[in-house]
Length: 377
Image (cartoon, rainbow, N blue to C red; front, side, top):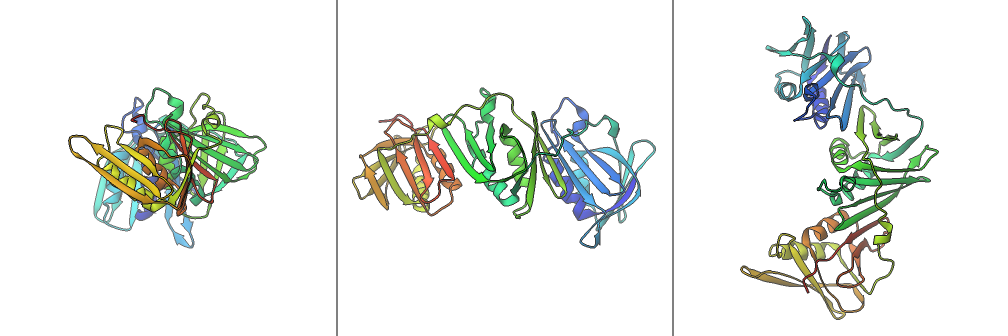
């Protein structure tokens, strides 16, 4: 194998596939990146057996030559060292060649590195996925769907299914739900679906977080293919595979209250900033903050650490309807929910001091946040 490649393109692709490379693994070859040169260009692959990422660099793009293939072939190189080497090479072009078995030489200018490669035939094959039933989502919308839900997945392995985001796709509608059993985030959107069937799958939160880091903010479509145990996200030069979580996601629809006793409408930014300030003296490991309605005039946000001090702040509201209320909640959960919402005004609907409450943007029902209160009163 021998080829010359633009360094910047190589660095970019290595950075993308590094997100899937296992740092600790029982399969030693997965600490490497597989490099394959064909007549069409160069592909790099990284995998930790849960996530696999393949980045492709074509021979040319928009009239610029990116790769010159001298000899086809493939090799696996230690990801950690290869990544550091390519970032620090001196010139714009890099020559990579494999000689004497798996000995790999990386040249750029007067710098020359010799790396011991590994047998590419031992590297696991990427999943083979039939691409008949595809779902298409613009890149920026996909990133938004991930950002607005993935933060609410569980970090505990006691219920592995809750460490993922539930995607339901029916008739060109997608509903993404994440919950750690103390809070819930739900986001709906329209998608293009060529799939004849409906889908109900759970994607690991970790996979979605890594995918989001790789995607740009364009309107380009991401093609998604779902099988029994894998999901593939496909962009122009990138394949991102993730395993799906096994098991049934809980029916969260019955957790969401259909009526409320107290509704408060207020400015998202003002409310968020008051919660941020109150959280500085939030009580206990759950960082508890209290909210009390003040008749029709506003709400009071307060918190205290008995041995340190307390904070009290009145927040102006645009509207309050229903019964007076005092409720306590985890400040971090509230801050996460408010940061995920889009819109200047929100409506918070309470059904009592110990019942889950719902937060929504005032004129947008595509997204819903639900938080369970904490017992303090």
